[in-house]
Each structure stands twice: as C-alpha cells, then as structure tokens.
Image (cartoon, rainbow, N blue to C red; front, side):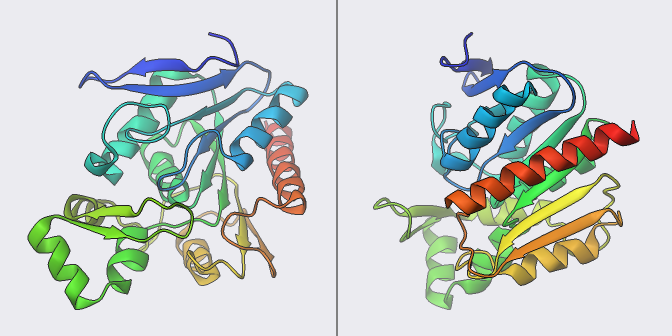
Length: 256
C-alpha cells in the first residue's frame, strides 16, 4: 500500500474498511471523523500532510457505510462504528496513539479510550458530540418525527452540508443509548485537548464543557473559538489544530 492508495481491513461480515496510514516515529495519531464524514475531509488530510512532514505516524479511515468503506450507512450504529475503530487500532496499527475525534468522532474517541486505555496516549477533541443521538438528535425532534422513527424505522433529516438527507434510524437512536457517557464520571486519565467553536450550530459549546466536567483527568485544556463554526476548517482553524496536535504529542513524549 502507498499513501495514495487506501488499504483495506476486512471485517468479519465480509465488508472492508478503507484507511490511509503513513509511517513515522513517536506517538501516532488517529483521525476519527464525524457522522457521514469521510477520511478525505479538509481537517483529516491537512493533519495527515503535517504528520508526514513531521515524520509522525498518522492513520485516517472510513467507518462502515462511510466514504470508501463497505456497507450501507443506514445499517450503521455507534456499536458498529466503535467496533470499526477498535479494529483499526487493534489490527491496523501499533503503539500509543493520540485520538483526534471530530464531532461524532469525539464520542467514539471517548468510548475507545474507555475500551483501550493502554493504547490511548491522549485525545484531541474537535467540537465533540458525546451522546449526540440522544442529546442533540432525539431531544430536538418533534413528537411527530419521533413517532415516524418508531413506526417506520427511519426519518430523513435535511442536511445543511449535503443535498442528501441524513437517515436517522431507530436502530441508531436505540443503540446510541447503550453507549451514553455523560451521565457520570468518565474514567479517562490521559491528556485531553478540546477545540470548540462558539458559533457552532450543530454542537453547542456547552456540550464540550459537560464533557470536561465528567472526564476524570485534570490534564484538560479547552480552546473556545468565539467566531468558530462546526467545521473549524478555515486557514486559522487548521493552523490552530496543527499547533495543538503537535503540542500534545510533545507533551506526552516529554513525560515519557
């Protein structure tokens, strides 16, 4: 495999996960994208370019039903996407990693850190959306939409980012309830950094602060970007992202 050609990690059901990985020295970084995002987004590719130049290992991949990976998105759940992420960590790469979780990827990064604490050296959250299926989706739906989901199994939610609506399935909502993390202390002890836009229309900055309250480690730093949106993909946002990613790696390695 080259950096230009995605690798393939086969899953037990016969589908495959597409991923890009570049070798390097020191602490690795793993990109965990958002709901219906893919590994070729601006933030993921910008970080990967920086990691290559810095000589650091970097991995980005597409979950089941996303991007170049196999599977039907409508059949995806938090459980499935968590299993995909753990498979990449367990079978695709080795050594300590900094998880970079964007939006839904922030929820998954939290779950991965709870499942594999020995592999997670740090977490960099970008507009983290823990418990979003319950806190942001289900709580925001009208009784009529909730009834439609319960009766038909799916609601096609209009998207601000795509002409194709987001299919919100009953399975996604019900499975999400198995993985809620904001109801009590979150046993994460590694360094945590958060970038959050205060003009984010999708994930309010207050949700990030709830996550801060629940995470047990005191090594948490939050950067609130007053004019930042959900994507945080402007040149100044990308520069800040690279700076934070570089700094957390240095800090981790200094302790070792």
